[in-house]
Amino acid sequence: MGREREVPKKSEKEVLSYTVEQLVAVNPYNPDILPDLENYVNEQVSSQVYSLDANLCLLRLYQFEPERMSTQIVARILVKALMAIPAPDFSLCLFLIPERVQMEEQFKTLIVLSHYLETGRFRQFWDEAAKSRHIVEAVPGFEQAIQAYAIHLLSLTYQKVPRSVLAEAINIEGLSLDKFLEQQVANCGWILEKGHGRGQLVVLPSNEFNHPELKKNTAGSIPLEHVARIFPILG
Image (tube, rainbow, N blue to C red; front, side, top):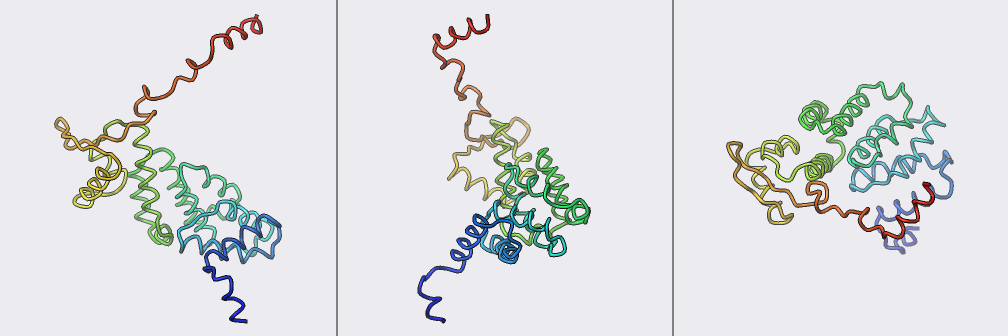
């Protein structure tokens, strides 16, 4: 039996991932696959992978089998979904979780964290997350995922951002921030400038959102004859 299991020579992660995807695709409403889906949530956490489809499938099964619901698993699903922001994964998952479960303290905390992120209130987010380390630190990569989102949001809004604003958004200060900025300058095209009485400024890479002139004017690309055809219709 042991030799037969060694023949494919695939890692446990690869086998589990493939099996879960098959189960979800073939029979997503079969309660017998619930333990496999729960195990896969733990696999996502330990291996820092992510499958929204598998997690949504598990939450739907919990709706049909509420007595089998694991709040620890649900919390991990929500943390992973929060890490996928700005994708709407958190809301999609929350919609499938009963209100009585959402009223538990750990879920109320995650909902508050989600609200802070959606509204760009990063200082409040990090302060709240610091009070709930037992929830968020149970999922490796959480801090890095939120920092990446904060940088993404800043890059959509600012051409130049004060060092203090960046530090607050990503929750890094002092020498750690110096090292982080060095890496970004070397690898991501960031530029550091001296501000006028406001300390250091960080020049973020140009994109069509922080430099509107880079955005393609789709209206200008419409051929005149196409526009002319509209007038008879409007008339």
